[in-house]
Length: 224
Figure 1 (tube, rainbow, N blue to C red):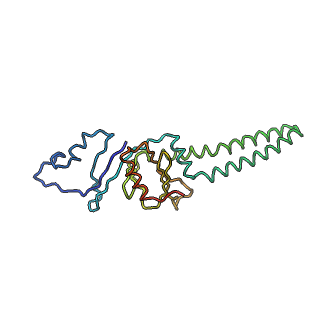
Figure 2: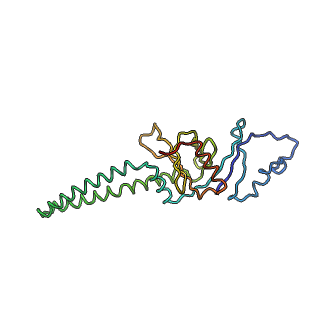
């Protein structure tokens, strides 16, 4: 689902004219109410009366859990964390093997308890990457990225009322199925938090895909 937005200068209507949408000669205003929600429509943005009109494209990005996980994984955000988890699991496995040899040589209940504990620790380390990925997926679903409006200089998030700039600060990752914008970490944050926007190709109609790609490419840097 998509909607095209345009920003135009607001006009003061003379008091002697009819104030109905159809009477001002603006075809966008006179037919907007008749257009189904799935179709594109032009609306005026009166917040920028003195700036050059801009056209934006509004999209509904109804991502599946699998799409979110795949694109977050491809950003490389969890690469270091996953490596450390697998490294710790390998160390514990190695120690477990050594302990198992001692259990065979000295069959005592204490050694068996240690073996069970080491096995549980190994499983927990191996499960951490999947748990971290699900945690990031849940945070993305709660971040209000389901609806986005793309303008040449910014991305607006109607659900939260916030904006993300398209001024070269973000990196753009283009995969076979989606655009993923990755923004730098916030300096004042106590911990690293992934800031990204995922736009699947299937959520953009074919005739609008070149315009979306052009705006995102012009306002970002290629992901390294």
